[in-house]
Image 1 (cartoon, rainbow, N blue to C red):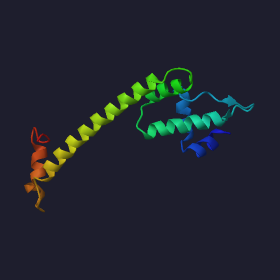
Image 2 (spheres, rainbow, N blue to C red; image 1 turned 60 degrees about the horizontal axis):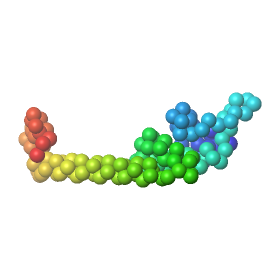
Image 3 (tube, rainbow, N blue to C red; image 1 turned 180 degrees about the horizontal axis):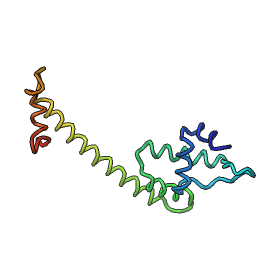
Image 4 (cartoon, rainbow, N blue to C red; image 1 turned 180 degrees about the vertical axis):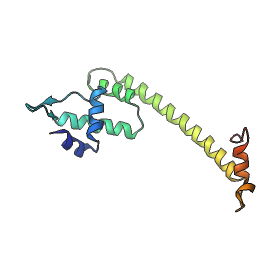
Amino acid sequence: MRIGELAGQTGYTAEAIRYYERAGLLPKPARTASNYRQYGPQHLERLQFIRHCRALGIALDAIRTLLAARDAPEQSCGTVNAMLDQHIAQVGQRIAELRALQQQLTHLRGLCGQDLPARDCAILHRLSEKNGCQT
């Protein structure tokens, strides 16, 4: 299949597919006599794998690690487990950061519960202060 057909089946753009080729995540396809890329089922399956990983927020370097493990089915999956443990920890850290941000925003929002002129808005005054975003 050509790149447009592969793009249609995976939801990726042709440019994204070419990017994954350049990044080494997708093997270079064969070329036709007229120099068109010719993709096979293995490309489709690999792009679906990449899409699932990206949906989980997995970075390209980690996807590369997962693909390497997948391409060596006889090896231990210890690197896969370690990579996923690290990703889980990163997600946990991000959740903690987002909760702290939510608390800051909630506190900030609580400063002004009225429909006042902007010059009297406590939120705008707090944001204008040197340490305005810290609670």
